[in-house]
Amino acid sequence: MSKDGSIKHPVPDNRAERFMGVVYVLATEFGIEDMQEVYHYVELLGEAVARHVFEETHKVSPQKKVHQDRKRFIAIFKRRYAELLDLEYAKKVTPVEMKLVNQANRFLLKEGFTTDEFLAWVFDDFLVDNPNFQPPTMKSLCSQFVLHSFLAANQTIREAKKRQELDRKVGMDLIQRARGLIRGGIGEDHEKKLKKALQGYGDRDIMLSEFRKVVEELEATYGQQGH
Image (cartoon, rainbow, N blue to C red; front, top):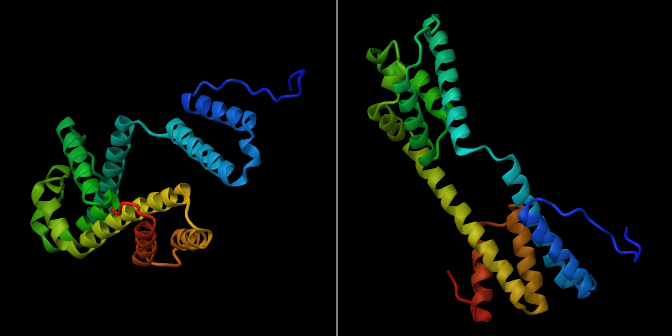
């Protein structure tokens, strides 16, 4: 604390943290701290900045993520290979096979599946129905034929995953639109209704369709452009 009684904070190195520090200083100087409804959004901004800083600090680099995913694929493959044939997969993994594994992982990620799901299907279903693929190799399992066979065999799950991802994106958009309505100022009763819908959707007490209906009705009432 300084001589004049104000609290001194060390200047952070992170730009987002420095920005938030300036916001807090301005909030104090202009008396925003005493405006409960306004300061609530300052706090929300602070939480968003904190999340950003945490994710930025702890995130895995894209190159490291590729390495980790490839390592996991190879480890699972070798374990399941040993279980299937009671033999250790002693063959050295070549650079070409590593590249194929990377491509397979990208393909699976794009389609919403994990390495674990794919290899479980390969060893539990595909190799049982296709003994000519035994003993399996990483090259053969990463082929377009096997990958596309996996998608065809799991078409229902694939469609469900795509719907879930679409619903997630729609839900995030509706949340942003709802917050925009609140920031723009709506009637007290409508604000309570919207906040209740936000809470209900966040707690999974109401469906996406019900949440959408509330947001779109209030957008129409207050002249907001719907999406």
